[in-house]
Image (cartoon, rainbow, N blue to C red; front, top):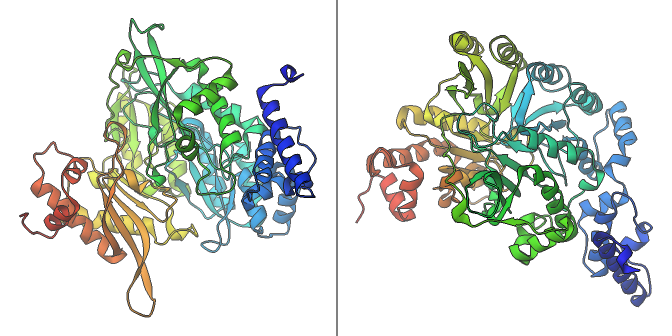
Length: 588
């Protein structure tokens, strides 16, 4: 009879039998078994994983219990009622409504934030303009571009929550699954399809995976959030190595035992907030198989991810516990065949990224056309600016806008004859196509302006650091300064040349504190990937601009030559020596 069951069904029956045995041994029912009958629908795999936890005598997290008690997609009528009554959600529903992309962010703001899903970060001009209308009419009158090439709209009163998600869907966009224990916005190379050095256009793969996820309820309710990115080898990176799954386009030559061409190199386990990049698995994926393989990786994670600790409920920790070989064998079992492995020497070197390509005018692969990277003030846009950019894309470009992980956007398809007009129109919106190296690489999360976890006003402090350092320590080489408000690392402070992690800094013996930062140095990404290391602890926010300026001046004075990057400079020095140079002291 066992041959009649699929591997997933066998695992569920094993877990159910174990739970039933444990229940009988204890003289009663296990909590999970008592809660619901044996699951048989699209949530079966998630419930089976919960049952195994209960059978082992371990405690599910509150979020797992909330999902089990009532699936968020079954609770929509209550969200509608709460909106009608202008009622704020209690914690279980605040978690559930994140399945619709709604986050109630009190006490920072007594309102919702709505996060979208924009596969590969690609928007049409009319969608972009429509989001401006939603922000103005239903939100706080501004939009934030995020580090996942996405958009957030904030200050949405509970009474406007349903109207917001309906308005998003009316634009042909999505917020479903944009929060909580789901696969987040699928990112890709921002200049996909127009980049002269790309190996592969990532847009069809990001969009196909997006719709695969969107339309399969069994892919909701993971042990925790999950990030997936496709990098096609273009000039602007997608930070695929910071994702749980990174698909990295590579070229395989003759004599490797496979048809020569472009494949994805499979990378797994990235989570830089936990100080880890995605690691090479040795597996190569034919592009047309990427969606299926991503699906099977997700299903192994559904079965094996930790449902007892939110801190450990990420793919990295399954890989740490199992090792890559065991994990990939489990993926192969679900696939029904072996994954493709090719000798590393058969892979051609990947084209290098250009850290300045997300700002300014750059030639496309299409003759006579260009993309223009627009610097946004720390990712924030007014409705007027948003509509203005949409109009520029429509009038002077191909009608598309591409969001990037650097909190800015790119207008594509601008003809040579229209570059000057487009740049002038952007400038008239009080936005820029040319900025200093400091501002081009400046990234900040929402901060305590809109996030209850953040310990500092990161966007305001980032602006203060940039304004001060542009005068006190101007640099001409690319440099990334990332400010994050809490340990969740939304601004990825660990990959910045200089990273700032917000902290409350004690100012007296009576327990009074002020906003401040721990400062790290030497992070990097792509071919320069590294986790930044601690340098200064508990720097008051008011002192952060001067502290960063001292580091930059030390770099300018003591770098080996004009080609040495800040990251290379910081990495070749011990922390004590770097602090001495920043203080103007000579090294012994």
